[in-house]
Image (cartoon, rainbow, N blue to C red; front, side, top):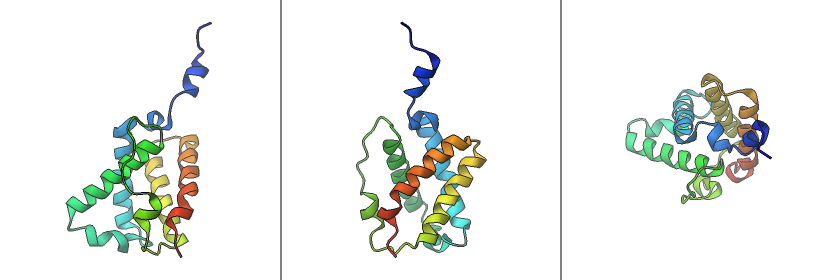
Length: 133
């Protein structure tokens, strides 16, 4: 019996729903720009304002992590979230500000509420690895 459209859609990965690597890159680019303006967390990002190569490195690591964690084709080879954020003393308010920037960026890029909710649930699952205050 042929597969139904519903069955085909149920096998679509989050990576694909987000638009693959290009979609994730748009989210990351928009989010980093939002972080640079966000009064709660911009102090953590402004030191990189004059170091575009470092900003690009951070963006690429974020894209790689996001792609691998959402069902993309490549394995993530970077540091764990706990390792990458160790000794940064990130407060819960900072984490929520960063998550809000991601959600706002996704809204601006016209991702639907269900997809944003799926990403937000993942963000919440990572919180304990990143918040250290």
